[in-house]
Image 1 (spheres, rainbow, N blue to C red):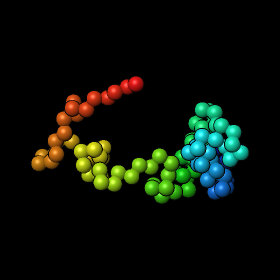
Image 2 (cartoon, rainbow, N blue to C red; image 1 turned 90 degrees about the vertical axis):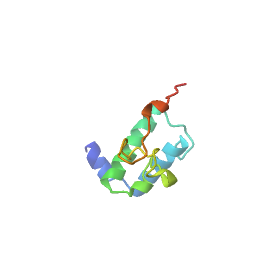
Image 3 (tube, helix red, strand yellow; image 1 turned 180 degrees about the horizontal axis):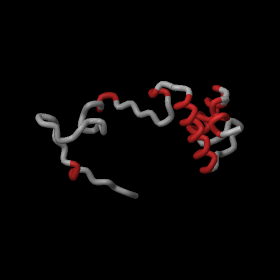
Image 4 (cartoon, rainbow, N blue to C red; image 1 turned 90 degrees about the horizontal axis):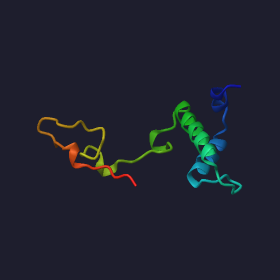
Length: 97
């Protein structure tokens, strides 16, 4: 059985358990997920969501832009539009800790 076949046959309850385990950082029995387990589980959940057309707002990692949609904070807004809200990208500084 290939990885794709496994995800196609994945039970929705198993998908929900994987999703919850990623969110909580532990398995349903309380054991902590290792970084590798978390990575593999996240890949499986994302693949499952794409394959089964889960609505975007229900997917892992979905961010509701809410009031920020269409503003300079929205990465989908094109910069330097005539008559638009021109934003200088140099005004933002990335801080790494």
